[in-house]
Image 1 (spheres, rainbow, N blue to C red):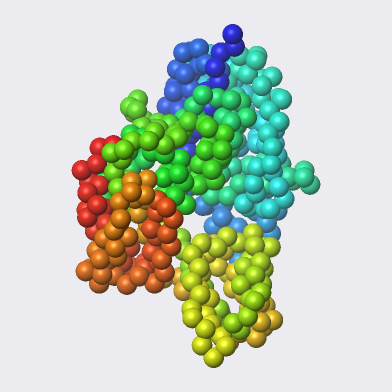
Image 2: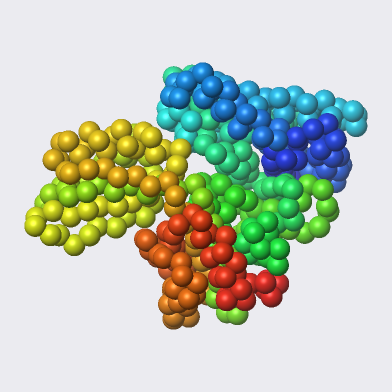
Length: 409
């Protein structure tokens, strides 16, 4: 019987310097010696990706997507080579592979590509030689045989996708915190670590701004049933398990609160109130791979209405260019943007069976004088767009009013 495969992913903070790299190597060696075959996925060291983006922006405000991917992919390649060197000091054989070498194929959308398939032929051959395989996260090969990157947090996606392809029992995500918390402990020190959370809850939290996991990686984990263990790279404590909903009847009403400052609000003003207008607006954005979050359309007056929605701030400049062209085509009055907004969300499977959760959230915000500009809901989430300046206060109040500081789930 072949030894089980374990996928371990180390984030940028876990490989930021020689000391952290040596610590990661020790964890990898320990896992291998426990009788596992080990695949490691790593991010770029520390803040290197942000530094590379800043260097590109120093050259041009609109860097070419293909060349941006070539630049950003270098960060992970530094990590894989250094980690292999550290593993080999323990007497274990290891080999570093880029995303393309590991068989990761993706579509042709530069800087935010989606994985289309994984052909791990070389990876499996190296595992069968007894080697630890260290794979560069965040990257793949597109149909044009160019390197593409998988978007912010793409190393999480690489790790989960490899775990699915290799039929690994668990994907361990190592970070500088103990697990997933009820909210960002830097905002609320009383935030509690969550022992277990469902895919759906984690997907909503990640999609709402929680930075522990990339939302797309949770989608893949849910689709293929990959159990994720988010844990500290510095302490050998149990972290947070992300898996199927265990059907706990006593699950808390609200499991967590997310806060996203990476939002921008756009409005196209006085568009004709007629069929096809919304399709023209959002179709143009979709063709340019710009994701839209919340959408509000006002009531028609004098044959026109306003349509407002949110996008991520890095997409704002491109979205404005696209909307100006759409505005002229539709003969709308104006396009207005606002970067001073943020999104705060409450998430929990317990909300399904507890009426009044949204009302409690809105009342809490109203009592604090926090204006709600947009609202979006799902079966297990309520999200509000507010002024960015009110974000920290809103998170603290909601965490307290829903009793999350006492939660020890």
